[in-house]
Image (tube, rainbow, N blue to C red; front, side, top):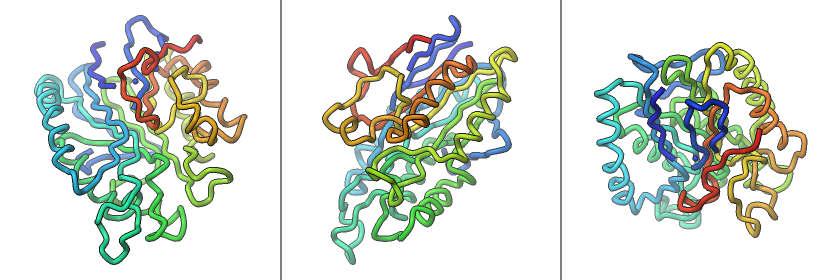
Length: 291
């Protein structure tokens, strides 16, 4: 199997499988009970993994440059086999005022309607389907929305997502699976903890059960923050001490659950995350956890 994945934890379950942890035209399809498939010609595929975009609408020329660097790769893969998609790891907008709302000069851009519509336009401009998951800043439209539920509804609508999670069959028996953070205002401790809710966790566990490695399934997981136990470099003075470093950080049992699932289900070949803004220019930006 030849992979075209850009950016990420190597899990090393198979000598023939390559994956990385790190950091959709609106034709993206996220489903709880089904799979959205691209045109398939083989088990080859190409996935462009985009870390924390934190879009500032005043600086879109930077994003245009970045997209121009991706397009030749996407074009070659589309011509070669057609199994191509973009996956955004969340945190789509800048968490500060970006001169986007003259009526409220103190409003943060992140999490607003204009933020998600701008991000959807950008992600949809690559010419291939995209998937997106919610990070800790994607429900931060606190001046526009009174509740997490209202903000989440906007996030889903803007990106044409029926649910916060997604599953896409990118190639033969190869799944891209994403889980979103769905709590901001209602967080028990810090609002910037990346929290995957119980409904998504139940769906995720069942997805793993339904697609065992023994049947040839390969699963690549996408979340905004990494699971505890991944071995990725973290920021002690920021995310660790504030309880927003790993998925479901403040709940010990839930925090452990993710890496336990990795150890139990050999179908998981890689786990991509963002959150730390550290790039990939250091040794432990890509890890191979001991299983």
